[in-house]
Image (tube, rainbow, N blue to C red):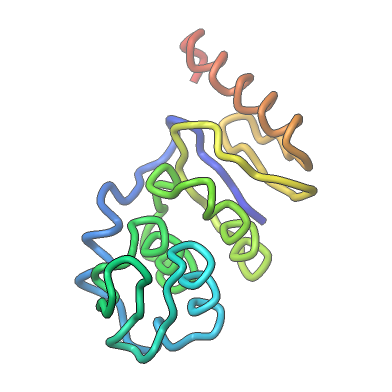
Length: 152
């Protein structure tokens, strides 16, 4: 299940892309699921653990991947921290949900992220579980209202 802390409630990794650059492992890049994420989000093909073919940049290393893909890989491979989902664009949303199908995933968020379809997300601030975009947006606005009223 995906658990989201909205604006407050938990400590989180502040600079996951830089952290990724220092801790990623070759095996992470060679994982088929990770290759699919990289291809979809960055439109880049993994050639090997050290070479990724980008249509814009040419041959790059994993350190030149987008911040969004780096955060996705960390969410999948490194449970050391709660990661800031706000580092990701909306093109990462389906992958966050897919990762959360594989394992319990808790993230931090500072904006309304564009999740589509049916899903199961728990808004940690209120303990509310939502199943679609309308419920999700309503729950985030409720959590934000609680913040405004200083009830947390």
